[in-house]
Length: 94
Image 1 (spheres, rainbow, N blue to C red):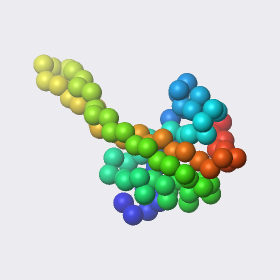
Image 2: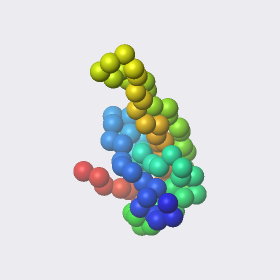
Image 3: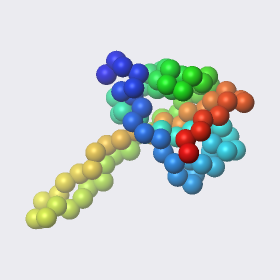
Image 4: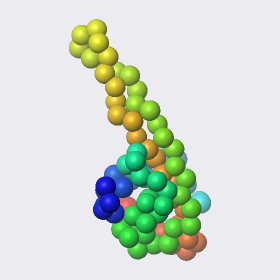
């Protein structure tokens, strides 16, 4: 997990994430749960060639889901990163 592209999994494009990007220049990503803030910052800067000011992360536990029989399964745990870019820089995903 030392490659830059291993840390960022996908971009989260929800209503709240869109408002954050428009008003506060913050972008939301789903990242590898083992990645730390410094690795996420370097991955964003290397991938998009933008300057990152701040990275906030949040861990989410996977929900319990019922299987076919009486036993239960679990969705995977995941991590979200909210990345603040330098003023004047934007990312276009659409």
